[in-house]
Figure (cartoon, rainbow, N blue to C red):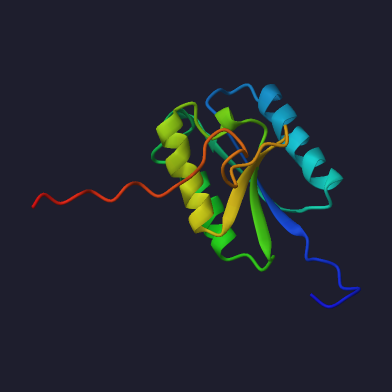
Length: 138
């Protein structure tokens, strides 16, 4: 990047899920995500919330799929999926890894408002890696 040129801002894709009709807790989590993004100078690319039954399972997650689609189509150089906590993605470790892998495949990474991320070893709760290749029997 030429000297004096500012790095392009990070695009924050805010995500949450909510299975209940009461939205006070959801609204608070989304507001924390917005504040976190603004404090860092990130551009909010949008907000995606899976609701009702879609919030209770790992598949299907139509809003998550819509978010990763938008990430692939973005014009910003870098993108993050911003969540209030890892549980907002999934409470299931394997399900969370699969969902976060979709974000990595879209060219982004996941961040929590606690400052955790899943960029690699020592960062965040789970390192997202490719599944092992099955071994063939001779």
